Length: 225
Image 1: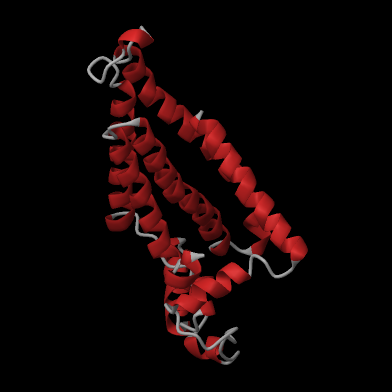
Image 2 (image 1 turned 90 degrees about the horizontal axis):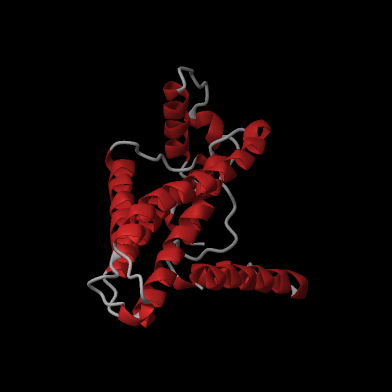
């Protein structure tokens, strides 16, 4: 929802940084309650980035290649493997063996794991901003009637692929502007409210939205246990 307001690029980078910051903060949590809260906030950033991964991927691809989105699921397994390999030595070397004698001094493996993984995401976030720069989605720019930026991004994508695009600003503008649902300014609070209302347009859609939110909440709760 936020990505529809501020754009895919900013939302993508922000969610990555949120995930990294709260992961590191989790490692420094003083008690179990704060661990739960910080993990929930970390999941908020990670979950938002997960959705943006698919959205950005689809919006940069022609329709006939969008089926390849299925292969992105493989990255889940790779990510879990990397996280497990990072956690393995820490948990094996710095975990208490007896729960009756388990203190912060002899049970810091999970903290080191969060520090390391959070730091890794911080590094990758910085690389995403300064090295592998994500271009704004042409579809989002088009929805905001930023035709000149759309043409610029399309030409940059084509150039990066060793191709040339014949699209011109005049051609794009000849189709007219994108009609907005309302005249509300982009960053007005009503924009957020309108987006939320879009999830509950009728009883059936509202029930579907509720089930979707509930299912993910149960998944997060199960993972935390």
